[in-house]
Length: 420
Image (cartoon, rainbow, N blue to C red; front, side, top):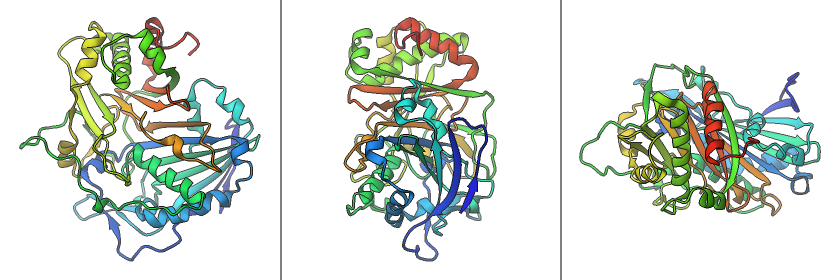
């Protein structure tokens, strides 16, 4: 077990690293072959933070947190494997039980003080993140950071390689941990037992608009950016959305996406984005969940100025998004490199992800945050569920020089208050 002390790193400090693996060894020679859709995500990562109160977590030790991971990794062994390449260059996971990196840290603040900050993107400092590479054989696909607050509360932060699975997969994994922690028997279906749900709706494969080929990155899986990207987040309620923006339609995510698209288009002026990507859950996704990339990835293209269009016109276009998963799965060979998030301005609906089902000692988290690491220059907007059913947390990642202009447009239209 190593120890790394970081000086001057703010209220979170005292990092201790160790490794957690499965309780049973994988059968020799076991591998996991990612799909094209999985490999389209290889330069992206998910960062999630679950925060529990002192009342819930005060008595939890490091071993209390680590022990349930053994049985979860027994169910999904490739999470603790390492990437290799076939002779063709296509990556695959060798299930060699190398484990996940587990990080212990401390925070000088109480949970109440931490959650007082309105911009929840501060939670990203509770996630220990390293990209995959440059030595694939030594790079964990998952990091788990356990941060103890001064009051006894607890944050569990996950850095999750998106190539393994989508936000629903991350939530499924963490919910399995919570069930194992509670002493329940857990089960995660193997991906081979699931039918492929993204069937080709057309006889010919078209080029998907929702992904972008980038220059080869080799074995260091990091999204290349020309701009410095910055993130901010804000909260709103569904009632606020209805009262301030009366639009026909019941899909709150599409309405919210339309408002923000219009704000960003207005802020960008001449570079008004007319193509966006929409990522959301597949209503036909099979249960129980497995760890896989099954989220719907669609593109929307309009032939009008979004900045000047009515909100109704924009929302109508978003509702007609085309699912491109089959085309992505076909075109991505694992040798060329692509990005999805930020290839176009990307809107991600995580509002249906069951983050708050991860109960510890019978209590749900005080707060859950999730965002994407490795967003391309066109930016992304992530919509999360709030702790209250009617609440949403919106996280916006854009080039640094656009952030203040976009905030100003959001304030002008009443989406955010002047305090954000």
